[in-house]
Length: 207
Ligand code: HEC
Ligand code: HEC
Image (cartoon, rainbow, N blue to C red):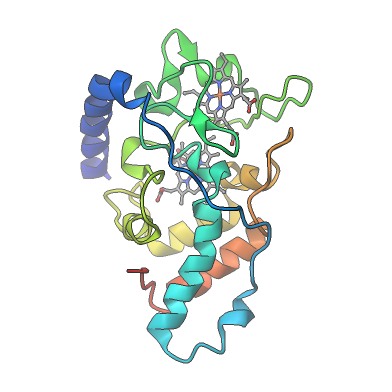
């Protein structure tokens, strides 16, 4: 935990130093978005355990690489928005602890729930994932390795990670994003079950 914290702070400083230049980088173009998930049972026919594990993670990846998640796990210190994952407007930065710069906290605009009158999404813990948890622009295999690494996953054990996927309400926002936003595919319960099945089949990462 302490080590992860120090790395996080160092990375935050590094990102802050180059943030101005990086924030203008164009987001990766995205393929057509999935709207549903296959059930865990659909993978039972894959005899080879490693191949089954990798296939399960590919299904999990339909959620992890969805804009609803990537917009808050960006490659730079600026969140992205909408399905096209364009840089957040107005310009906002991560700041200390992901809550925004001193003069412009996330909570200045993001309330404890979605506000459909203005279309601003919300949640009581609305803030940006730290730099070591950046997923945008990475391959699914890289994201997978990162999720298994306590130095880059907030010090979580695999059981804690499964629990986070299944029941964390900020993760859950991805399925009820409000406004015209497309929800993440399937349901959080289906997603959690796939992630757990992946972990129990050896947690093998795609190449
Ligand atoms: C509003 C911003 C926001 C959104 C949207 C969001 N996250 Fe996160 N996520 C965070 C923050 C902040 C953390 C850091 C841990 C914490 O403070 O809870 C985090 C941490 C995580 C972690 C644990 C650390 C890691 O990366 O290994 C996982 C797993 C995760 N998020 C999954 C998701 C998934 C899946 C979605 C989409 C369905 C999602 N998140 C959407 C902000 C967000
Ligand atoms: C000045 C107001 C303001 C501030 C401050 C602000 N936001 Fe936003 N944010 C918005 C508005 C408005 C939208 C909706 C944009 C749209 O989709 O039309 C938005 C959308 C988003 C989205 C896109 C959700 C999605 O999937 O499309 C993310 C992610 C986000 N904000 C994260 C943050 C984070 C993290 C912070 C603090 C570091 C922050 N915002 C600070 C106004 C703000």
